Image (cartoon, rainbow, N blue to C red; front, top):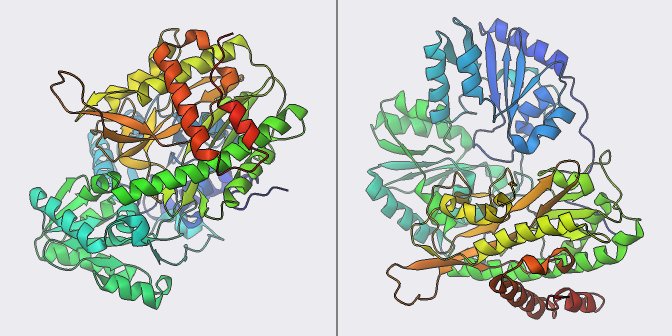
Length: 610
C-alpha cells in the first residue's frame, strides 16, 4: 500500500577502512606528507553533499553530516558531534579509527596537543574555509609543523568506483513562488556591497546563488540546489558559472538577461583576474573555500572577509514567500494529519514497524500531488530509537512499534511554494506518568517560545532559555539547539539565524525558524515538539517603549492530548493549545479525507481536566 521513493532503508555497506587508510598513508608518503586532515565537506561547504563528494564516508565508513578525520603515520581519528555518537560507533571500525567527540576536543585542539614537530599535514584547500585553514595553519606553526595545501585531493587518486558528479538540470524558480525578480535582488545586494566597501562579491554558497538568480536544481539530495558559483561585481554584470548541459535553451536565455554564463572551468581564471585588477573582494567566511581566497590574493587582490549579505536577505522572506509557506504548511499538515490518524489506528495492533510509518507518511505527502522531495530523511524512532536525536531507520535497526512506546517522527517536505519541517511525539497505548511529565515540560517550553514577546534586535541565544526552563527546573536538558532557520524551497537548515545557545544573529521580521525543544531518555524514549514559526510584529503593548516582535506559528497538526498533564499547565498555556487546535481543525478539516475527519475532530477537542 505504501512506498518510499525519496529515501531508502538500506544499511550502508561496511567500508574496508583499514586498507584504505594504509593506501592513503602510502599516497601521502609519496607526496612527502606525514598526515592529512579531511572534513566532511565539498567545495561549497554544504551540509549535505552529493555521493561524489562523500570522501569522509569512503575513508571511514561514517555517513553523518558533521565529521572530520585526521590520518597520521601512526594513528587515525574521527571527530564528530553529539548527534552522531551512536552512529559513529556503529559505522566506524574502532580498530582503525579512534572516535573523538568534538565536545572533548575539536580537530584543531587535538592537533595543538598531539601533532608532532616537523610534521607536514596535508589539506585540500577546496574543502576548508579560509578562516578554518588559517586557524589550523597557526596551530601547526605553533607546534613546529607545517600545513601543506594538497591538490589534487589524495583521496581522489585512490577512490575507485567513485560516483559521477551530479548532472541534474538547472530550472527556473517561478516568480509566483520567488516573489521578486533577479534584477531587483541584484540591486539590493549591490546596495549592501556599498557599505562593505567591496568591488566584487564571490557568491560561494549555492543556496545564495539559487536565491539570487531564481533557479533551483537537483545536485544534492532533498535540497533543490544547483551546485554553482557566481561573481557579482559592483558595476558590471554578474557571472554565473554553470555547466552548459545543465541549462536548457530557455533557462539559458532567461539567465542571460541578468548575467554572463560561463562554464565552471572559467571560475579560477576569473578569480585570478579579480586579483590582477587589485579588486577588494568580499568573501563569505562561512562558505568560501581557502582555495578561492588564495587564487585572488596570489594575484594581488584584497580579501574582505565577513558574512555574505545575501544570506541575511534570503532569510527575510517576502510576502509571496510567506504566503507560499502558509499554503505549503496547510497542504503538508493535512498529509501529516492523515498519517497520524492512520498511525493511531494501526500502531496498537503491533503489526507496523518504523519503516512502515516512514513509507506511509511519504505516501500521504506524495498524494498531495505537489511534493517535489522530502526535505531530509525522516526520523522515525519508537521506544529507545526515539532517544537517538538524528536516528535514521535502516532494515537492520527497524523496530516493530509496541504498546507502551512513545513514537517520535520528525519529517518535512519540499514544495515549490515552501519547505516544511515538523515533529510530533505520540503515545502508543497508555503512557507512563514520567512520559507525560516530560512531554508536558517540553510542550511548556515550546509554548513559551511560541508566545514570546521580544524587542527588535533580540538574538536566538537570548530566547533559547525560554524553551529549557521547565526542564532545567528538574535537572533535565537537551543537547541540541531549539530552532534553526528554514528556506523557501531551499535548505531545511538555513542560516544565519537560529534559536540556540550559539544564536548571535538578531531575529528579523520575515524569518522562518523551527521551534523544537525535546527530551531524550537514553535507551528509553525520545520527545520532541516542533512547529515552524514566523517572526512578525507584535501587537502594541500599553506604555511600551520599544518595538516588539513575536512568533506566528505556521505548522498545522494536532498535538497528542494523551501526553499532556493538564494540571501542569497555566491558564495561558491551556488557552494557547485550545486556540492552536481550533486553528488546526478549521484549516485542515476541508483538506482531509472522510476517514480522517472524525479523528481530527477528536484530536483537537478541548483539553480534559478530569
